[in-house]
Length: 112
Image (cartoon, rainbow, N blue to C red; front, side):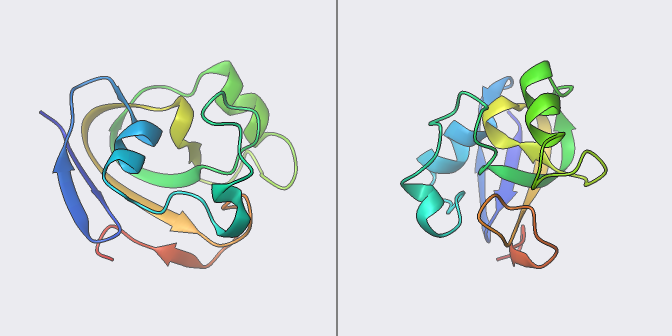
């Protein structure tokens, strides 16, 4: 069972679980500001669940790659859309500032 570490919490999930769903189930603040109200609810179109992930995850699908190729995101940033990411092994997640999580300053890290 993979372990997910985010915002100072560590919890297990099933292999192949959707990272967005896992984070929200464990009350991790995935969205910045009003993005917690205004987001696509996991279909991969808004980009507000962008996070940096270290560890075992699925390859980026076409929705993830397409949304991150559009402003304000950049395909050169080391980010993924949590809603389009499957957890395949232990992961550590970091959330950055900006409405879409596109900023350069961490809001929270795996440690807190």
